Image (tube, rainbow, N blue to C red; front, side, top):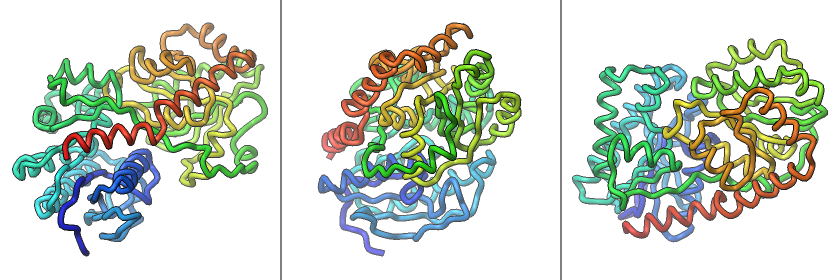
Length: 407
């Protein structure tokens, strides 16, 4: 194992290449970009796949000039709450130990996982180096909001204490949603000059695209196909249930409007049960192959993004940016004034069903299907918004600017 004498940036993601989940893609893009811009980068991450923990990766390797230092963790299941917390704790403890040994200028850590940002910031303060905090999902606040944890739970109290320390002591905090900034200002307090708003991004799905008609045949029916590709867990279940029930409407069925749900999650079986008498709702397994995912997006007529009201100000569904890359209208069920709702209105790329009565929602969906001019305008706007604001290049230039102000 050979380290360089001094790293410009050390990143601490829970997942990284060759994993393919959203965080892994984002952090791999970021590390690659910084290296291309001449920065020396190390990534410290667990040695097992997060989604498929039986897969192990080498403990040290150099990928495209990125030094990847993988920390040994046991095989734990992220879908079990206790095992997930244990995984985060073990990663954070070993990450702290690793950071102590490194010579670096900036550390960047993300929430989630729990504990990691707090422990690596502690080391960084001691070394009088710079720290960037990237807020993806605000925990434990989200868990309390969803009633998955009590505000008096000792772990919740501890994690809130950690957050207070992080917001106060980080040199910069990167937020991915404007609603997050509002929430943190109100509930934690943060200096304005520490705030950076950089939305997440997507890789351009048109790049290296090879059309596979087999995907169209496997996943899509004749008619108008709305794709939901993503997790089917606690944060999505209420919205997905609402949309599935909406799909049972006679008029949508008669107009061949189909809902295609691709992914997994702990509430998938529950949703399958709700959809069993719907003739236009179809479920498929998670797609690991990126080329297949590109085709899924390409052949869909529209995309569904969901978020429960409790998650407003907590996180932003990263699938939204891949949908924009696909250049088709977005159908959303997200809280009013959440980041996705703001984005839909600002860029005129879709419809938020959140506050609509059933009839109004049906009319809007049918207008998407039957009004070609309206459909094309929304599609054009979606692709333009992606290119102007949410492409990899635009977001990563913003990260580079933040890094360079601290170096």
